[in-house]
Length: 139
Image (cartoon, rainbow, N blue to C red; front, side, top):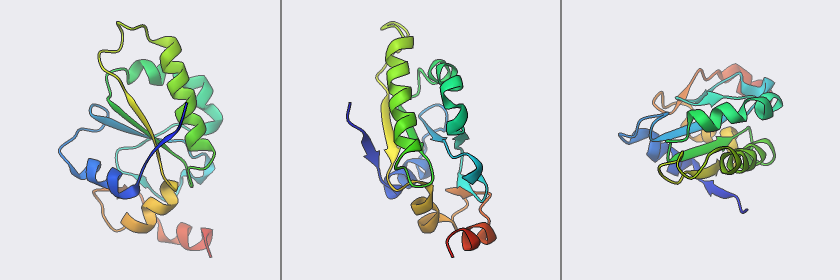
């Protein structure tokens, strides 16, 4: 099961379009304590430490959502792992009749760290951004 990626620019285009979060797409942020300091607008935070306990409900709640995008800070471990678990759980939990259309499962390449560095000043794309956290985090 290969991981498919989406770039920050492609995700920004989706968010800026007329697509509706939680209906046409959903961004799932699996950062844990590193969630503070900003997030992608409309994203749902499901910390990786609790992801396994909540993935069944996520699958049921998103069975009609055609595009699911997962990420963490860098999308090297937690984001891809959550996407894989979601995909596997979706195949196991939903019967053929439950899902009316296939769902594309993607991982945000380079995670929120890259996304916020490009789009932190765009309130349509990033919310709750805190320059002090990012300045101290990476200095």
